[in-house]
View 1 (tube, rainbow, N blue to C red):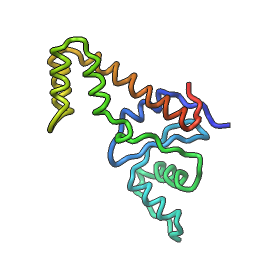
View 2 (cartoon, one colour):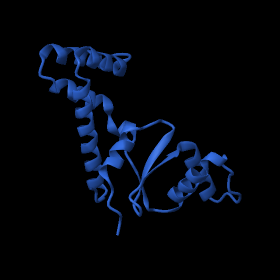
View 3 (cartoon, helix red, strand yellow):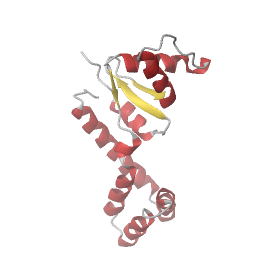
View 4 (tube, one colour):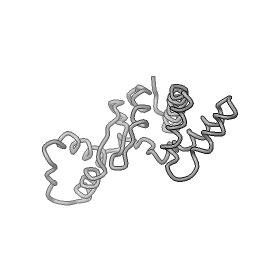
Length: 157
């Protein structure tokens, strides 16, 4: 029977996305594992029949073992990437949810063009609504995590 997953762990992983890393859920343990794309690529090459196992740097031994398990078993499911999360859409939804017409317009203006994320965060600070944004974003990430769990038939708590 697959493990029940703490939803907070999935939300935390969605929040901490980096281009050079991927997050996976271990269906056996319910743990979220994060591995570098580089080590995952090395593990895929090794799993495809390379005779000699690569020798990762000492600091990556545990991560290397996880990467090998990911490519050689079917007990891991990849979590949504930052591209699947669409943070810009979350920013737009938040902007539309703001009651003040003036602040809403400022936020919607800030999210267009170069530097949209920086301008959005600056506007949040200037308007004193950072805490509202963080609450909105947390709820949006939670919704994404719940939807992902349901899509993959994963029990969460």
